[in-house]
Amino acid sequence: MQQKTIAVLGMGDATVVEDNMPPPGPLVLPSVDAQVFAVPNAVFPATMADREICEEAYFEAGLKAAAAGADALYINTVGDYGYAMLGDAVSIPVGGAGCGAFLSALATAEHFAVVTLWPPAMRFIYDAVLTEMNLQEYCDDIVHLTDDTLLSVEDGPNTAMADMQSCAVTTVDAVANATLSLQTRYPGTQVILGCTCMYPLADSLRARGISVLEPMSAGFCQLANQTLALN
Image (cartoon, rainbow, N blue to C red; front, side, top):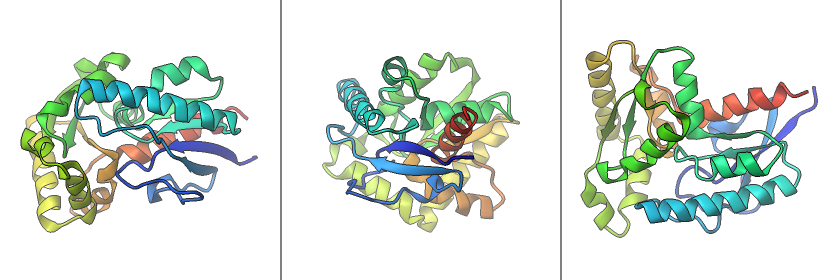
């Protein structure tokens, strides 16, 4: 089987994409070649207006990657910015961490919940994806691990992502406690980590015997399988 190239739009966190940068660990699969593309005009999506900017930025980056010969496009953010527009504009498969994670959850569970480092003011990001996919009824809850003051601090979002990726004990404990609480309140729910930047936590949680679905790898695996099936 010929290896397929999947263009990965962004690193899934605050990392600045440079030429020939290797993809994050969850995107390294033997069956596909993940090539990271920058999304230079994207901004941090703190508001609906920012989200619209991201939609256009990911759309433009996706068109560039498709023109460069990619076999598929992966939007490496749970916000799935530009997903619908790219799906209408290109003839190759398009996937996203958000839609991929939600659909992967429903492949093994009847409903799901989200634990996110982002504050309640950013819930619109999840609501937009759920609405676009018509999956609102399957989402039990969205738990926010920070409050809205995070957005009032200039470097608050970057610091929050760095803290999550460092897997400090307090960070792992906070996510673990929130996950266990959701699993108690909603028996059978599949808990999804709410940001691609949270991926380092997945292994730490599983080592504690706590089941979570990591969106970066879940969405990418789903797209890889779809792309490979086109052979």
